[in-house]
Amino acid sequence: MTTGDHYRVRAAEFHSQAQSETDPSMKEQYENLSRAYLRLAMQADRNARELVYEPPLLGEKSRKVGSR
Image 1 (tube, helix red, strand yellow):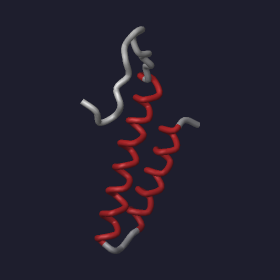
Image 2: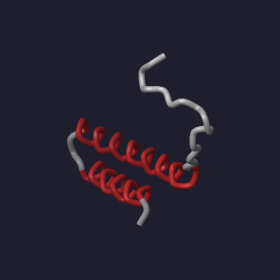
Image 3: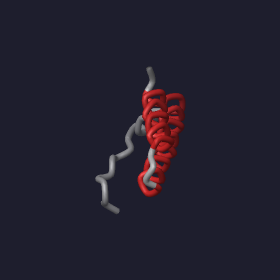
């Protein structure tokens, strides 16, 4: 199971909890969590197929983070 699939399972669980929730505030929170996990699943899918490693050019000095 991929990372995206794991996120989709959690999204479905939150959606199910939202459907059975009687408190409107909690229902909204579960719906928000479900949508957030679906977004995470889509991002995980993109990352899995679009990950590209670009090594530094030869002779290029590396910069420290935060330096200018």
